[in-house]
Image 1 (tube, rainbow, N blue to C red):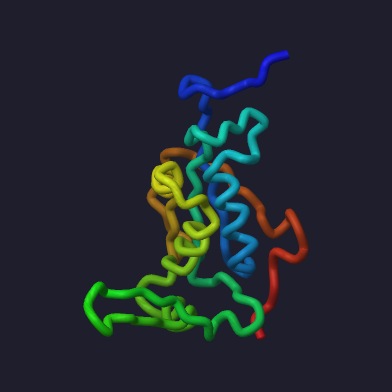
Image 2 (image 1 turned 90 degrees about the vertical axis):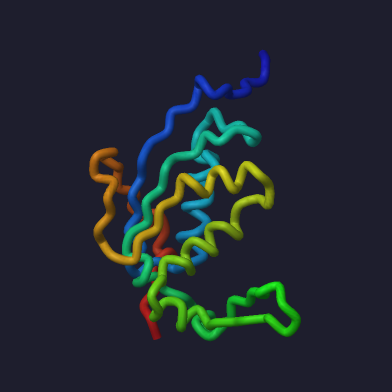
Length: 154
């Protein structure tokens, strides 16, 4: 018996749409990261981009548990004294709430060149509309996978 290693000819990419309304951010990000890497497939090969194309809609309605809405995202501009921060709540209420979901998924992928390629297969939209109807994406119901995936806001 030989170990199977997938080649680019063996890859079968699908399009998946996930509705993030009411889902807990970390649990959503772990499901999306797993789908982007292709770990749900029996022919998973770690060094090949064999994951699906994932569309996340309603990213502005994602839930955060505990005091995570007041946690900060930090970044540095590159200039002396140029550290900046915003809370997740400010970002979710701002112009680009999809960035919270994108950063959560990005940080669950490995830190290598392949992860950058796999992130190009992720599309996150704040509203319910997306321009990928021509690809006829399948709906993945993350809410039904585990009752802990949904929480009510406090």
